[in-house]
Length: 489
Image (cartoon, rainbow, N blue to C red):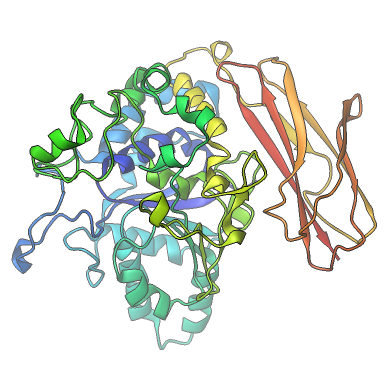
């Protein structure tokens, strides 16, 4: 199967560095077409000619975070290739790094190397969708689209080109961090799919989102053993109290300080907006949700925003049919309005839980990350754990009638010879049939089997999502899924 095409645009915040390090560990799963520096309302490089001073931007001459992450990747590239095929060479990744529209917040009138790189990908004759990840503001992407419109609007082929780009482009973003989407992209490209992937589970609010039994994946001990003390990529990963800072004089970046209370940090002039954690603890990877849907884990989340996966599960905006959102609103828990019921997954207690559509996967996400970091320092394939292989026989998408029996058979194996556990379950929130189906499952010589009868009250067009989840017993344990989508015809 062809890999998803993707371009990352990113501003220099510490969680972007962390997300970039994780993304590169999964770079074998996608075809990367660009790694582009961008601005946002939180970070911009400044424009002396326009009288705009830099804002929370690294000092001139500092190694910027994409380059820093690729430098770390280059040190472990040969070991990663031992454990999985498809990792791009460091030289190739460096050829994809470009500076976008970084001088000012939301400026998209200027062509830059980064915007021209995106423009080239948008104009390429490729039938695959193009996922442009917006970790900062979308101004660089807006600049690319604006340049295409400026050149081709009014020509004979404009309508066809406009339609082709609109159908191919998927924007995955952590909010709209400047005004260029609202000012330019949506008015001029109304059919482009925009997925707002913002979650608490991946970001600075992780501890408010993930289940209490998964908090140890954020704690200093787990993070040191599985991330920050595991090779060059782990060493580059930002954790609380590590003594590192992204930009000089940034009063919002106090994360490198260890052992200080919020009041002590405020006394030093910092704007403390989240309480300090113990040294060595997880901080944030807010933007990782924007690429998590592209990981080939069997959840197929890139195919449809409503299906859900590691980046959460989006629902359609009430005001824009081509915008999909996790409905994340940050703030004190007692002051944030409850999201629409359709955007909530039920927690282990059966009750809808805010952001659980992303948080439900956290243990699998972190163990997968730890395994890939372990690959980066392990020279022999036999000395590390690898993912189970899961394959459903027949089609993953099936059309049936109410009352029909559905039978799904799958096979699973483990490349390391580990024993496996498996379960079938109905992802009710991802489907549009509102009820529960009774699954009969078995695991024997015929494989992993799941059978159910489509309820008589199921209506044409409704869907039922059935997932097979297979885990090994390696260290760390790894999980793969297969999703079967049943549509009532």
